[in-house]
Amino acid sequence: MRSHHKQSFPLSSHRFDIRHLGAFSALASHRVIGHAATAIIGMFFPIFLYEFVGMNLQMYFLWFAIGVGMRIPLFPIGAKIFSKTGLNISLVVGTLMWAMYYGAAYVLEVAPGFYPSLVLFASFLALAICHAFYWSPYHIDFAKFSKKGKRGHQLGLLYATQRFISVIGPIAGGLIIAKYSYSAAFIVGIAIVLLSMIPFLYFPRTNVQYEFGFVETFQKVFAKKYRYLSLSMFAVGIETIVGYAIWPIFLFMIFNGDYLDVGIFSSVIVLVGMLLQVFMGNLTDKKRPKKLLAFGVDLYSMGWIVKAFVQSVGGVFAASTFHMFGSIMMRTPLDTMMYEKAADSGHYIDEFTTIREVSLTFGRVALLVAMFFLSQHFSLSVAFIIAGLSSLVITVFARVKVGEDFAKL
Image 1 (cartoon, helix red, strand yellow):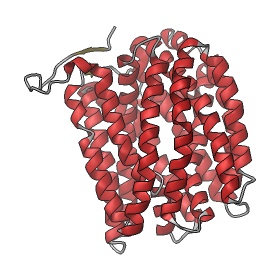
Image 2 (cartoon, rainbow, N blue to C red):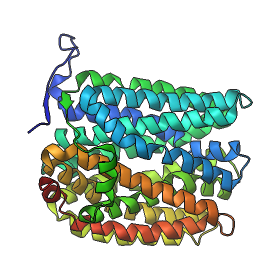
Image 3 (cartoon, rainbow, N blue to C red):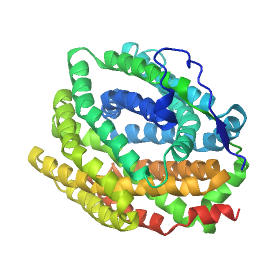
């Protein structure tokens, strides 16, 4: 077994020593703190970019496609680097790049005439490096630190906590932007992201060895043997980028550019799903996640389709509530299965997570490129129909025997 970790707690003599909380609690604490920044800014950055490019949808999708596309070649490079440095250093680098991403956005806001295209490119590049160095190590650590048989419960609690923060975050973000400016929101985001690094001090040291070469990584992504995994994650990539990059713009249009209304609406929808999230986490551990996943995907897919045909605030609220229910029914079993399969893949856990991230990103880029062309002739609602159809593909993930496949590599 070439993946291993041993514990080292540099602040163990401190009277507030939190060693007894364990590695998973430290990881979850980091993620919860970091999510606060996402809750405040995440909904509004797409709107910021949309306004920055003069509300030109084609330019908006072009820039987003470039920004997301930059990540693809960086994933195997990042994996090779964190194989040498260890996962902890990689997480630190990724988090610092996350802060720099907000920092570049701050420059765009306060000095829009200062080489705007170059600064915007730098912002997306920082985010691309963040993804390459952060997400694979995070998923590896989550699979290692979480407990088999309790992953659904742990994941449900983590997501429920994040949803609680997401109730407050969008309202806070809307208030800050409406009363002050985007620049104030970006400063708050930078401070929170840097604060999220404190739990890193309590992470066990984790080392892995990424064995795939640069070209080999992409060969594995497109190999017939792993088509179920790649296709499922491709579909997840499509629907997640619709939720991140297109849904906020749709709400911005529905609410006629009122930041606070967008924030309040987003918060209310999240509030509806909080209790259900914990319930689904416990249910996933007790029931077969494949059955829950299949039912959740059907509801989730229908939710996207319904969203495509609503135009009023009341209709959007009803469709969003229904969609939230389907989202929770789908995401908890899906992510639990993903971590189970990652953990079962043994010393190929880093290869598994890297291929997963590459496949996700291909899906996101494909949707953004498609919308670059489709936005010339159709409304944003066409993206919701695409996301709904893509969600149905996610069920193939339940058929993947990833642990077995990777054991044969």
